[in-house]
Length: 105
Image 1 (cartoon, rainbow, N blue to C red):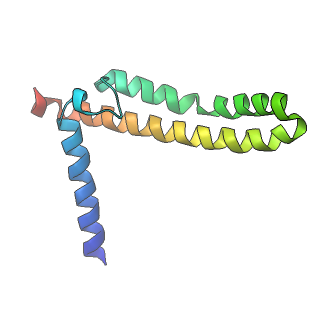
Image 2: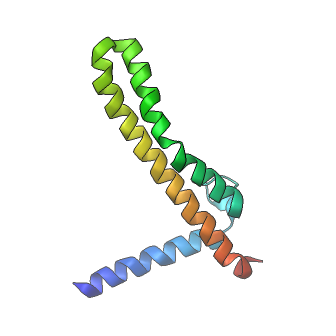
Image 3: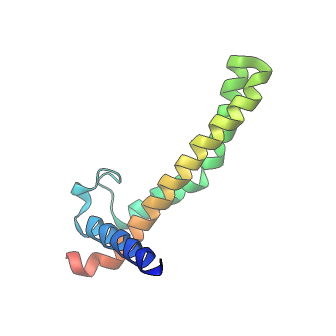
């Protein structure tokens, strides 16, 4: 069982490293951003995610009345979780860009 976990983690690490070394033009999930710019946008996505919850509650309440409090909270939470995941991934790739920069240049 431990061997399978080690193999799957190794494959994941190799895939992420290969995607990082490929260069920004070949990474559609991050756009053309690299290094510190990618870290900045990732951090911004992560920090501003709670605002999505408030925004969705306001939008759903104005559209659906009191029921919008529930639907807005659910929708906002889902959107915020996606934004946090995207921000975390961007920050991770930004860090990998910085760490692998000597190998790419």
